[in-house]
Image 1 (cartoon, helix red, strand yellow):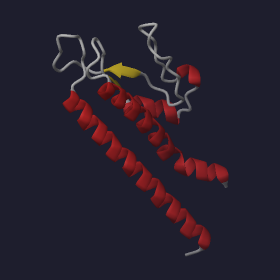
Image 2 (cartoon, rainbow, N blue to C red):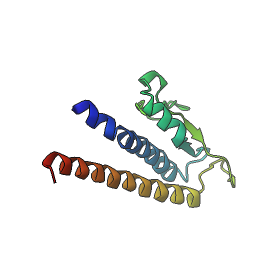
Image 3 (cartoon, rainbow, N blue to C red):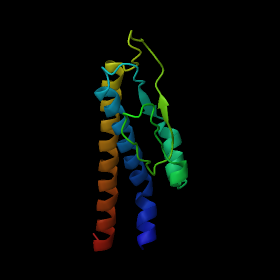
Length: 135
């Protein structure tokens, strides 16, 4: 029974995990909007979902690397997929590639899709509960 429940909810569970990781990347971009030479990053959602659904191992997981000894250590995530640099739309003098309009739009879009996944999971759980209760 538990395997069937896991199978029924695994897509949305993985989608929430990937969306959460993407939200963290976008938030990091926003937080570093004034950091010289910071390169905006994002996650290829489709590739990350394929890896998550295929059961990617931590070796294949999303990894970060330090470009300065002053940076914090990044910890790998189990979602799969690599963080990619965003294409530069309008560069800045200090080498920062964060475009706040793009970041705000992506942040809002990702948050709405995250909420939609939660609503779908709730709907599935309500249907299962109704079936179990015989209603």
